[in-house]
Length: 39
Image (cartoon, rainbow, N blue to C red; front, side, top):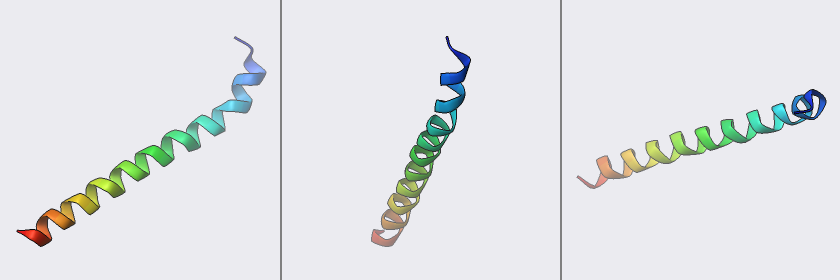
């Protein structure tokens, strides 16, 4: 594994996973609020 390529891609992967985590958290919160609103 070439270290230089990994170092270049690391910020991209970090942003990618952070975005997925944020979207998942937001989706869960929205789902929870809608569920709470209907009951």
